[in-house]
Every structure is written in C-alpha cells, then in structure tokens.
Length: 218
Image 1 (cartoon, rainbow, N blue to C red):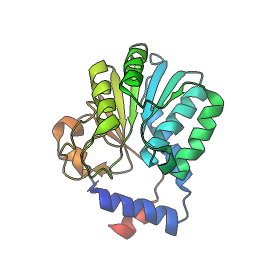
Image 2 (cartoon, rainbow, N blue to C red):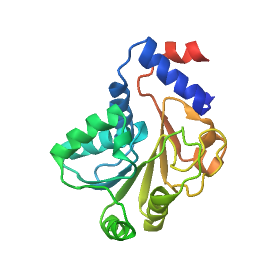
Image 3 (cartoon, one colour):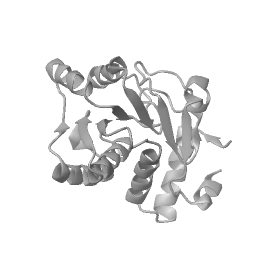
Image 4 (spheres, helix red, strand yellow):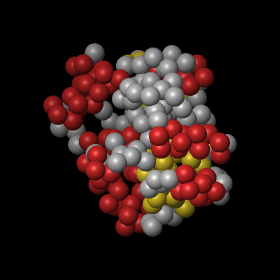
C-alpha cells in the first residue's frame, strides 16, 4: 500500500492543481462523493457536519450540500475564523446557505450546550475540522468541539483524517475525534497508517488526482 506524509500529499495536490490544471473544486466534489459513497443512506437520514474553515471544511460543506440535495436532514457547525476561509470553503458555504438555515457558529459554552443537545437527535456526525496539515496543539473552541463529538457516542465519520491527529506521526495534538470510519482521499496518510486503531477503520478512495501527479512527486 502506498503511504505518504503530509508534505508529500500537499505537493501531489498542488501539482495536480497548478501544473495539470485540475480544478481544486472538482477534487472537493469528488472527496464529498467518496464519503457519501461509504454512508448507508437507507438507515442514516440525519447528519451533523462539523467543519473548520480550510479545505477539509470545504469537503465537509460539499458533503452537506449533496446530502441536502438528497433531502436529508443536515445541521452544519462551523468552528474557526470565517475571515480565513478557503475559496472552496466559501463557494460551498454560499450554496449551503441557500439550501438550509441550519448553519451555526458556536462561540460560547452556552452555544456548545445547545449543540450537544442538538447532536442527540441526529444519527451521524461527520468530522471535517482539521486535515492532514495540523501541526499544533488543539485548544479553545476546537478542543471543546472535539470533546463534544466524542461525548455524544454517535456514529462518526472523519474526512481524510480524524481531527486532532498528526498526519505524519499519528501523535495526538490534544483532543482527537474518536471516529468509527475514516474516508481518506487518494493515498493512505502516514499518521493514520502508523496507528492500527485508525488504520483498521480507514478506507482509501480515489478522488481523481491523476497518476501523473503522484508519479511526478514520488
């Protein structure tokens, strides 16, 4: 099995986008559909999707948008500074705002208490807070949010990598989402592979990154 570290994966992504001119929004869409492919939609009809403001969050919003288009019940929780949102995040958020008013930005302990109560009513949580680029201790609202996800004991899917996990070493940057399934994009990430408890529940999905990009970097 091919396994890469975070820097290598970023280089592959950038080669595909910058050199081969694969639109990044297309990769986001393929990532979203890859996650949805691994959800049993016959039994899972209500979702809480928790997103950061970067590209991992963009994947999460694209998942939300597709589930909303299918008529599923979806709540979206944003954690992070929206002034730092990525272009792909913004594009998907603009669409989601036209599809639902169930978009929340928890900012206080009181907000988190309401969120925790809301999460009791959904069948599935999707974690799209941090991607493989995390390189600092998780604190503040992000830490509270991850703790809340873990307390709910709901079936949880992490997009690409569990939020709070180091993409290279598998070490914890404080709180880590205790997910039931990881859907990782294109290539297995070293931080997931290094820890059997994560590797054994990880599915690798092709999202359309050309083999030419992978070969060029590797």
